[in-house]
Image 1: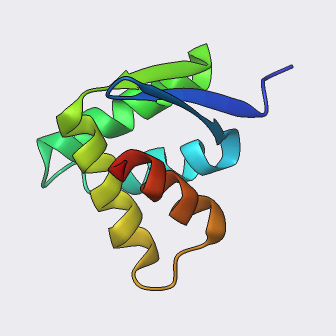
Image 2 (image 1 turned 90 degrees about the vertical axis):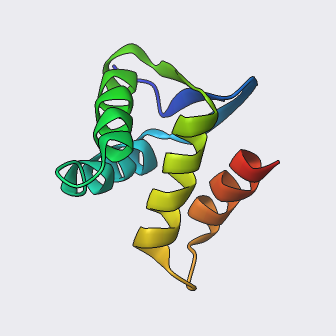
Image 3 (image 1 turned 135 degrees about the horizontal axis):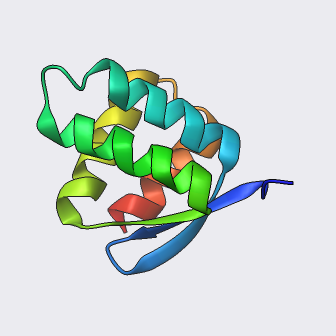
Length: 90
């Protein structure tokens, strides 16, 4: 049975993220993969994280993650997305 959370190492800070949110973020990054190598890399990394239970993002990966969150949520951030964005920015 898969874990309910995925451990994302955000440039040295491990944050448990709901599996559903990681899946949504991976899909959102994949939709922009054709125009951004960072988004492509992030989508692949998050896809592998769904299989393995964790992933490590460097500073560039964290920036790409923040960009995807902001692109997907705009000004009306869902609480789970906002919490992840705050962790990534810290």
